[in-house]
Image (tube, rainbow, N blue to C red; front, side, top):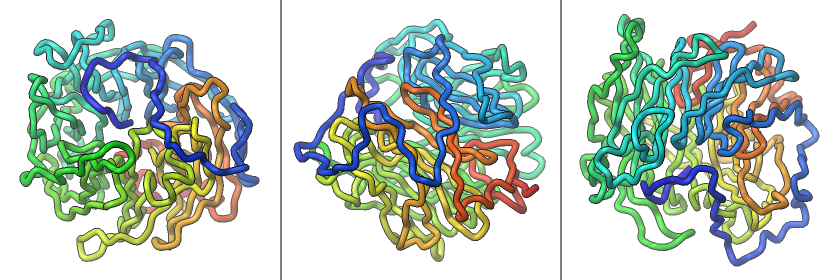
Length: 467
């Protein structure tokens, strides 16, 4: 989710929707709070948020073995998903600090904190970022005991950690260290620990034998020219300037990464883990805020998302149109990025529904490029971009507008071992199943780890393996 400033965040506050003046002009909007799906999609189960974190919104997810880890502005929860039809919460950790996006590696869970806190503890309170003693960064937990995770380390980073990306080491170093690429942005001269121009990312080195020794190893400047300068103007026509990155997806096997960096979409060479280097860069007149990136399995394409309106606006309607608040599909040719098309859900949403392209993952179908993706109150879309210039939706799950007009929706939707898991702001964890000839082959691919921002090939050469 886009953050307009680094001011004190009030957890659980209502989302302020930036609504367009023109109505959605659709007769197909479901009744309030009603689940609807395409014929090939089944809603298997909803697991409400556990009581300790029920008052705040759910965020990003990670998976390992039989467990799902779901972030929340008030902490995170661990779910047992060995039987998806009977998924259940095992534990919740109360540790406030937005967004608490999570990734897992071995027995370690890493959580991103991008709201200024009085200290690094789980008992901290909000403190404005203009106070030098304010803390934000990355928290590390030991989750070897799923019923009782332990907080073991914090690492403060400049401008906090809006999102984070785990990067395994190379060769023998892989057994010794894991690296964390920290994406943060929105500097301000009034913030002692978040000064302009902030054209960098922070890289944390985590020794696997002693994770409590984790520390920032370097903070390379990745935009030495300052990046895209932005286009002034109010929503929906303003374009964000580049002052850091929002999210980075690494494809470590191939030593590359894709960065969604506010005003720029970029490719990185990450052969030197501590010195990522931009090798290709694009801007787009229709993009307001480059939000996230996903490679095709063969790394010949990359999908970038535009978070128009910061996740709080109704952009999936007639007024905004099909090319803004959408995905952009690029072919990777001769090391460069070649635009091919946009994709946006074809189902108009009501003007009370915040809706925009958000987090998703590949469905591992051999020879196809198929993705499942969250669209906030647009729900979950399953779409095929095998033909870069002709993407199409093949299935969906969504709820109608909320009766209380409070906004929300699905933050992340990821495919893992035969099912789709959707992290909903208010409703908790949804388990979804698609039954379609285009995707059924994915059920033969099993994984023991999924951090979507740490992309790994399915089939030969990666953690995914065919039964």
